[in-house]
Length: 359
Ligand code: PLP
Image (cartoon, rainbow, N blue to C red; front, side, top):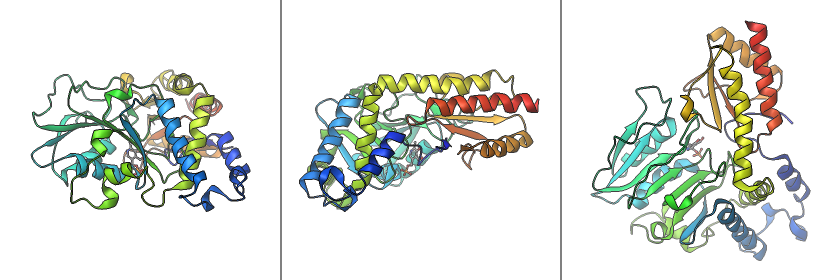
């Protein structure tokens, strides 16, 4: 297996792929692949419900929330959230600390009034901005945060207290990577292709009252109430993606649930952050230390020649996906749940070796 540090679509657990391979032509004795099954069949309905149930158990989702499986990626949620939840006369508030929260904010502005209440843009998106000095406007419909900025590698630790104002989070790149108190959030969304499975399914976890009634004139497919009322089976679902997600959720369970996964993620990323910190400036982490992501480790080398040579040598040594996003350059190691400890240990070792040879 390659040492896969891709930012998304990203590595999947080997055991999940092996199970999927075994069941590829005959899912649970049906003589069919999941891909060939009717989404109106009892078998698929069971898979759909079981996958929702696994989410509820693993994430500790309280009663009063729906778990929806949609399509269109997190990018469609950038629009669906304001279309459904931002009425005229209200304001959507945003915390902006990287490329994805910027996009979410810009998209919301297409549908209504939106403001940025705190941003770390001026300081180069190296941190989550200090929220203690920012107040929410009186007529705030919701506060939107991005729990982990995938491109800059900057992650929320403690989330803001918003009282009565709904807190909405894009968790595309760190969902199920650590235990969280879901009851703090009114709506969470995530594209699957980092921690949950293949691209194609987008998970929305939301309080019933936010998804049970959408504005009258919204298109059917873009209304949360359509999907909530139909148990995510209004139209043909991304059935294969949901199936793989089911296997991934079982794998997380077998790894000790979110507490076990978090422990692994901390151990894995410590190895790479140590390689950065011990390098005396040869590698330079992008994020300020308290905001360092456990999912996307972003760093630069002290000069462009070294950086190019590093990426070339890493590629030759079998490390995949280490080039930083084209908008920021540098290097990025994405260490999602399924990236094994051994891959991170090998990368840390490679970083030490490369530095020793180069210095
Ligand atoms: N939000 C975050 C934090 C992301 O990392 C990404 C993709 O990388 C997106 C949104 C966009 O997701 P999608 O490609 O599923 O639309």
